[in-house]
Length: 60
Image (tube, rainbow, N blue to C red; front, side, top):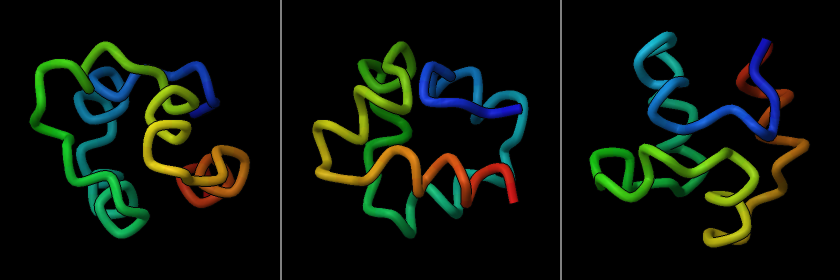
């Protein structure tokens, strides 16, 4: 189960197919070393994305 505290690096490693959803939401920094340690909530704050909506999409 993916939640707002899931780290971007862990998410991409465990569910590489979810990268497409993150890219479509506007997170184009998935390869950035800093993003690997960020949580979904932190990344959403930076990019102005609704974290609850994104988590729903990632878990669908």
